[in-house]
Image 1 (cartoon, rainbow, N blue to C red):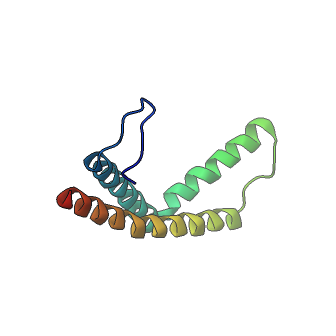
Image 2: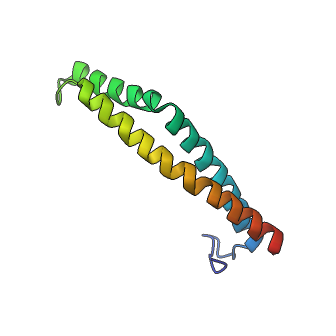
Image 3: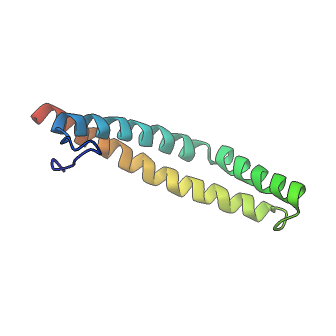
Length: 100
């Protein structure tokens, strides 16, 4: 991972990579916790977008209650993955920042 190169041709230092891991881990943790604790927010937004698309353009079919439930399950699953991977990235970033 230390061999990454930016578009400008400059190498990425281990400290910069650690900061990227910290920021990404924090974002993933926050997103995961929100999706796990409140999956209906994401599902409602997606269902509303599908309903608006159907109303405006007549494309597809109107969303049903089963579609909303499926969206909630999907949001909770992605949130669970993010809630597990995010803290791991945070810990890895802290360890990498302290040891280098």
